[in-house]
Length: 292
Image (cartoon, rainbow, N blue to C red; front, side, top):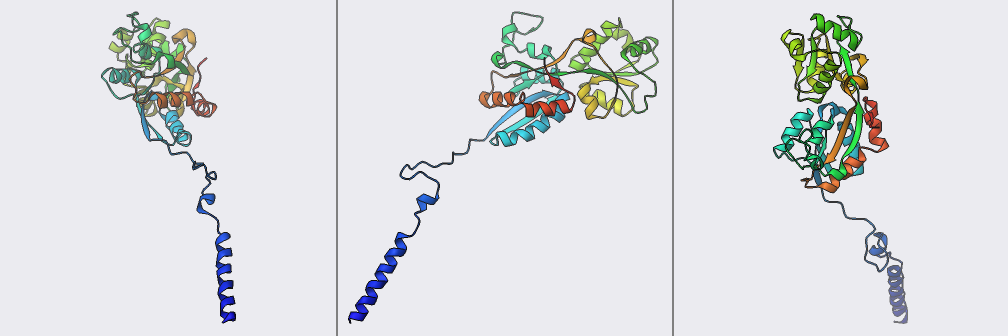
């Protein structure tokens, strides 16, 4: 009887010691003892922002969006690429847009409420951007490009002007509502060329955006074209000359958050990211430079 009682007591003591050696679940969860606060923050709510960007930014913005997924995994950036004039029209018509990046100041000015008293810059008196976010983001170059083999032997804008006067080449350029077309018009003015006369002579073809102009050159359907350095890079076109500031001014890309954005904080955060060294290295790899 005493032997059985001793065995029972030994078993009870053994179970008690095992219980004392067990780690409490709370201790393994990473929570502070007794605080009830978890060390992991709750995931941010998913957000989608809409970015309207000039067609010449397609390759670079696509790469940056991929990189931004690691910075803000809860933010989906949905881009729309078109000519700046077309994007401006869509914004004016009420399209969902959180961030606008134009290939020229003209289209951004048309939305800037601080310029609504200037009918030349903001003819409709619109106030659709948050002017406190407006920045000059990038600079591009206007270039003269030729198809493979350069059949006409065009080597400079000076030579282009002479060919246009004699009417023995076909040049592709952007429409008048497209920034690259407007820069081309300034080059015509620099050389004293009349666009209407050139068009009547049949030496011009047009594209609704810079990508269409570059495609005409890459397909050798024209003798040369005027595009941005970035589009020459993306379509592997031969650049024979770059326009100077005197010819057409600087090619500055302004950017701003729309005042009607549903997610202004996230849009501004993405805009800020575009100026970081990581994003700028992507821009520079395709021919952009930071705006001076």
